[in-house]
Each structure stands twice: as structure tokens, then as C-alpha cells.
Image (cartoon, rainbow, N blue to C red; front, side, top):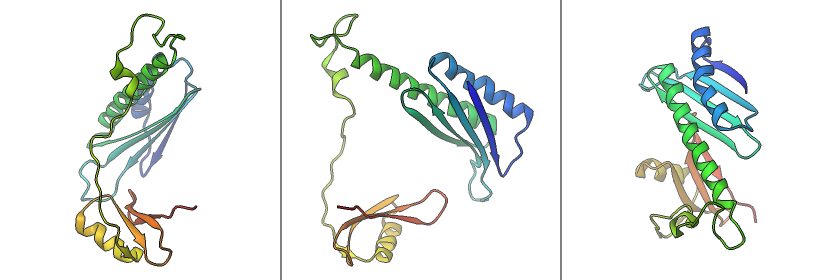
Length: 179
């Protein structure tokens, strides 16, 4: 495994680097096709954020690229939580791969498969609402009023359905679909 550790707003100490290598080494044992891991450690400077020690990782494999982000009050705890999250993602990926490797009659090589395993992700809630035409600035105000992370609206200028969302680093983003 090639591990690259970066620091943003902090100097990465040898102790933290060794801890990250030890914890993320668990992934190497789980995923044999693991090629590269990029770990970015960051300290949020905003005093209103209590959990300001952030660890973000990107793991490149032969299959999917895994990403995770965790924050806590201690950098080592953030790395531990991040590793656990990545291990759950690996477990999910491996289970998904094994479900695909079925024989021609629909049963896996080792036995029978229940119907629940074949279904996949479930939609747990559906919502319908009217989409009012408005400018993007008005949509930002609506987003702030409802307190959600995103807001769907019909752009008054283009008459297209757009999404305004709150960006993690501050500010807002606008999604405009192209047809």
C-alpha cells in the first residue's frame, strides 16, 4: 500500500503518521487490490466548530474508489473513525461483488440467496411539492428559511429545474441541468 499523508493547516507529526499507517494498514489486509491511499488531515480554524480535527481519505482500488471524511476533537480519534468507515465500505463492496458472482441458475456458488439480498438500496421516503419559479438569490433565502442542505426550484430566467445547495467550505452551489 502506498500511503500519502497531507496536512492542511497543520504539520503532520511522526506520531500521527505512524498511527495513520497502522490503522489504514487494516485496509491493506482486507483489499488485496489496494493500490494507493491519500489521507488529508486538516484543522478547521472556525472557533464555532467543536469537532475541528478532520481526516479525509481517498482509497484507489482496482474496483471502486472509496472516500470517507470524519471529524472529532482529536486527530487520532478522527483517523480511527475514518478507518472504521472505510472498513464498512470495503465490507459492503465485497458483499456486492460476491452477490454478482452467481451461477447461471441464480444461486451463488455456495448455496441459496434470499430475495432481500438481491434488491439493493431502498427508497424510504418520497415527497412531492410544487416548484415555484424564482431567482437563484431568492432560492438561497428559501434554503436558509427551511434549514436544509439543498433546495429545488424552477429558475425564473431559464424555466429549468435547478438545485441550490450549501457548500461545505462556505457559500452556495447551483446545479443547472443541461438537456
